[in-house]
Length: 83
Image 1 (cartoon, rainbow, N blue to C red):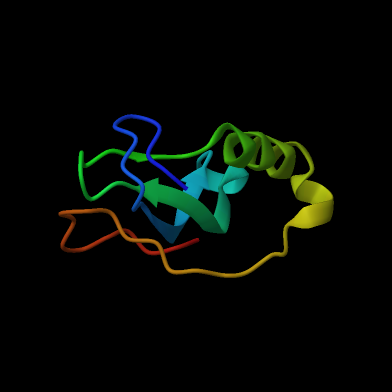
Image 2 (image 1 turned 45 degrees about the horizontal axis):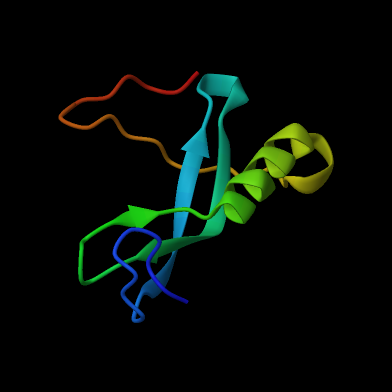
């Protein structure tokens, strides 16, 4: 695979997690492939990956599993207690 921006032939593919929405509508998608070019520094998603993210978001009721996770606010020393 080559970089879409500089045509470098040696790109890296990393897997990342991203969050979409907020509060009760929060969705975490794990293992999203991200292309990283060490030559020009660009980091981007392919169109195919973006379409798959949209498909997952649209079908979250059937594709997602419920997990309880800890959430912290950056820079907040004493976060409010969960209800």
